[in-house]
Image 1 (cartoon, rainbow, N blue to C red):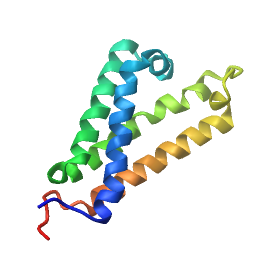
Image 2 (image 1 turned 45 degrees about the horizontal axis):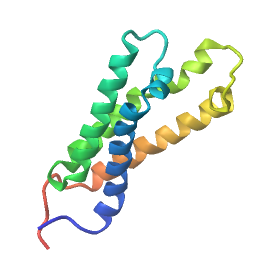
Image 3 (image 1 turned 90 degrees about the vertical axis):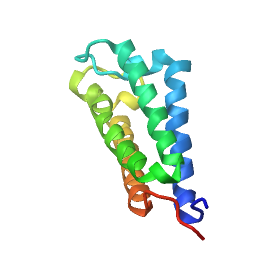
Image 4 (image 1 turned 45 degrees about the vertical axis):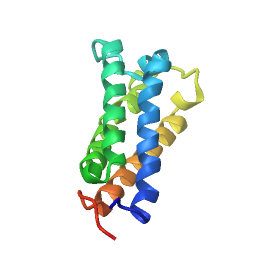
Length: 133
């Protein structure tokens, strides 16, 4: 039988967030290319790879048998995105967009740390296998 209850209440929205994010890497790649730090090569390839990774971890979170692995992978993946959110501070130029100004960067980092905590909580509650009953 499938896992139900509180585990699903936290896991399903996380899975949907990650799959949705991954899909938008393909529907709006220019936005994501703009987030890739300038010191990284092959920006377009990184957008594709990160989009595929987002979808993959989202699917893993959605499946009760792989939920723990998927949630841990989600936390790790989102952590790897933090330098992209800090990049505007490194560049120290006048930010045109509000979310590239220091307060916007702080908000982006806070939100992403919230996602990491959410994924970690899902991983802690997941059994790694379906429960009966």
